[in-house]
Length: 237
Figure 1 (tube, helix red, strand yellow):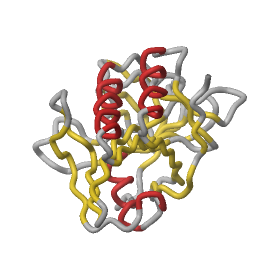
Figure 2: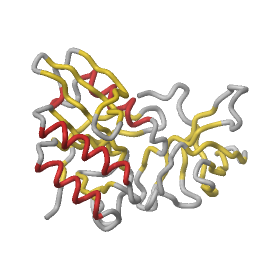
Figure 3: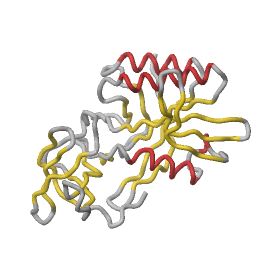
Figure 4: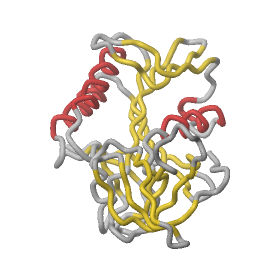
């Protein structure tokens, strides 16, 4: 996914009210921009850290830009805009980067399914039948390790999605939990049991039911973000 034009650089002053961020651009301009991230952004925020943002000239937009990439306290880059994850994964699927999911004949997004009135991020159709793929964006990293974790806050919704996938798997339908690790300098991902033990337990139960778990990492600059490599998954226990 290329940014056209390339992102502008600045520094973070503060993030507040979840969806707002005050920044200072490289030319000294102070702006309030949109923070398209509903999560806690744990271990991601550092006041004075570098930010990269896109501008908009749309008169209907209240804010002049969107925060796209940030610098973590560990010096990594992370994709702030969680809305990018599904587009990144679709691009990777169509390019055949995610080898485990190659060879599909059709791709559909936001398909209704399940016993709890859910929508799956992707349904991939194969001659042998469909595969249902749920995508989660991972940005939680730590000092002293290249293993990222999910989630960064308690997520009942995430548990619901795993239960839905487990129901499919038990019925003989291919079900995949795919972690898009939008954080540089990462080699693997694990459930953040110290944050949401219930999610970690449901993940292991889903795997026992036949749900596949995949993780892929990205290459990130102010010009593009590209899914480019498979990462290890550590389930624990």
